[in-house]
Structure formats: C-alpha cells, structure tokens
Length: 203
Image 1 (cartoon, rainbow, N blue to C red):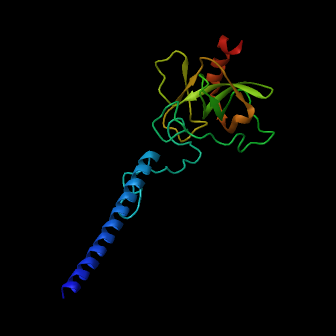
Image 2: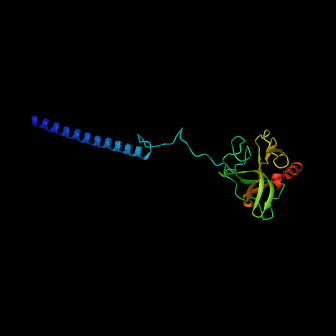
Image 3: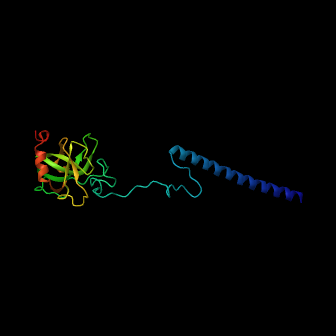
C-alpha cells in the first residue's frame, strides 16, 4: 500500500513539474516577443492578437478629386493662397489651337514666388513668349488693404463665386504653357486697360 502511494505521489510530482516547465517556457517566449516589438517600434502583442486598428487610429483620408472647391478653388479649407492640393493634369482639356492669349483668364499650375511649390489657381495672362507665358495671379482673399492688388470682377469667368477677387499686380510670374489647364474667360476690359498702363508690367 505504501509503495502504491509513493508511486502515485511521484507521478503527480512529474505531471506538476512538466506543467510548470511548459508554463515557464510560454511566459518566457511572451516576454521575448514583447521585447522585440518594442525594439521594432510596434505595440506588444497581447491576448487575441495585435490589432492596431479601431477607434482612435489614424487612417488615410479619401482623395480630393481635382482640388477646385472653396477658397481659390484649389483646396477644401478656408480661402487661402497656400492650400496644399494636387495640381490638375498639365494641359488637361486643351488642344494645340487652344493656347493662352494676353487678356485671358486661365486656370494654371502657378508656382509660388519662393519656389517651394505650386498651386492650381486662376491667373491673368499678361504676355506669351515661346513656351512660356507671364501671368498675374488671382486670389479670392480680401486684399483691399494692399496697394499691389486690384479688384477683379468674377461675374464673366467664375459664376460660382459669391464675391469679386483680387489681381496681384506686384510682378509677373513665368508659367510654362503646358501648365495651363482650362480657359476661364476674359479680363474685364477696363481693368485690362489699367493693367496695360502699369509701367512695371509692360517694360
């Protein structure tokens, strides 16, 4: 009888030792995986997997289309000159016979003055020379306090606008002809005559 009890205790001890050994190995493996995750910059795995999605997770936004809504029709935010938007395809909707001419208003990919990028916006074509044109940019922001901006009526070329825009007459900006996308219309005749009388723009 005593021998049977001894053997039973030995068997129980062996089973308990095996369970403890397996539990120790499982926990050691879990700690090693968590250390690797932290070293790789990932969240440690836990419980039922490592899902990092769900509420509060940043997700890519949807595409914005051609970026011609609101403001200067080149962004989805407030009316501003430097809303980041993807430019429209160069030369979209144009043929070889449909080129910008002086006095016309076009949508074009106009570079920033500081060279940091460009923005699709309306502009007034001042002159065309070879493969480039010189333009004056148009903004929908209120520039009534600036001497280098003139009001430009929008009724003839932007019927969706709820107020007139402003023409920047500070300096012409060179734009490649293949950066012009769509012809919007023509400049107000009185304003165009006034622009042509500005010596720094006609010299």
